[in-house]
Length: 366
View 1 (cartoon, rainbow, N blue to C red):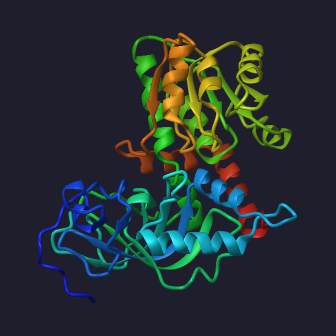
View 2 (cartoon, rainbow, N blue to C red; view 1 turned 135 degrees about the horizontal axis):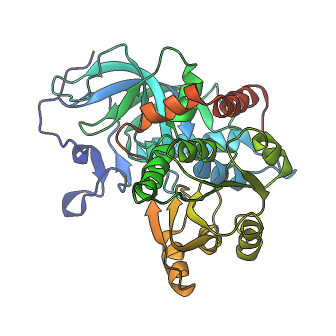
């Protein structure tokens, strides 16, 4: 066990920022480099890392940037890139996307002033981004082939006084719980926004771009749970459409390219017209203006993808004379982890999609 430091610390982690320093010091997410040494301050918690879950936009960028001459993902190059990022920055923050992911692990040490309610031995999922979490890896990621978002790893991570973590539920496979908690902010915010409409006596229609994915399927389930009306899911391929058809998660499943303004808006029009609420869950850039065009005047667009260009969204809405409210899904809503897990437990279709995805990732190399 390491001796607890006695120097003052910041509950938001400013004391761990190495670059920039001095008057230019930033919060950990915006920092270039963090102090990831294992010794904890009084309000910190050290986690023994078991698995990292890279966010979809970050992993996609890394995979696309490291291809073999045959066009396949160069797993060794991806692994080397992740090791370089963590080793250089003291955290897992993709320098291109700015995003990270989350992790699961076991609590090793708890500072005496930590407010998180954790004790050594707790198995937890961190509900804050790896882009601001001090992280050190000690195994060279030897058990990871670089070909999936889920990374078996050894090392340690540090949680600050204002970090968030959830104990892993005993009734679920930890890997399954990790998949759910990785996107748990999406369904909670969708439910909140839908209820804003229903509280005013409106039954909103909901459009989900990327409806067969993790955040997309949970968002569809949350929309139904909160009292939404017509639900439309957009997917890029027939195979994903087949996964959703007959599940009851969506009233209509549309195959369209979410990056195509005319293609998407035309497909949505054919499926019943622009939606009151559009939820963007795809992990590719260029979906901002198509999403806005597919949303009714006075409606709401929720951007959950870390591939979103928020300047393009704001300027695009202005250029289209679109009277839409645009929300950034920041990943945190009070009670979001418990709510997402309750959707998984209570919705057989969602659970089947997640378990199928997990089985596929465990047996097939992309």
